[in-house]
Image 1 (cartoon, rainbow, N blue to C red):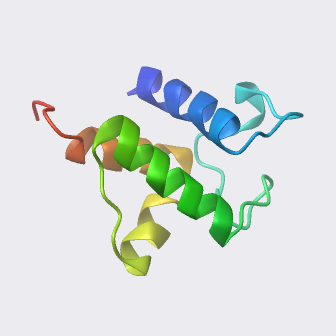
Image 2: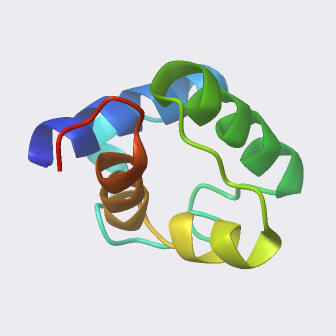
Length: 88
């Protein structure tokens, strides 16, 4: 799981072009949307598209998005449990 969390941090930084942010700057349990990174709804939309493309994971309701984007750890848990072709 730690490997997936690290991978997602890098993808968040790359997807959103967060030039002054390093993986170490993003805390595993820190709030993603509205937190220190200052992510907004457009950023979330870009991340949803990246997750669908890279992991085959769909986030199709606002309620689900709120849970999934609560933190990097919550995001990693969701991706781990829902990615296509993954063995549970």
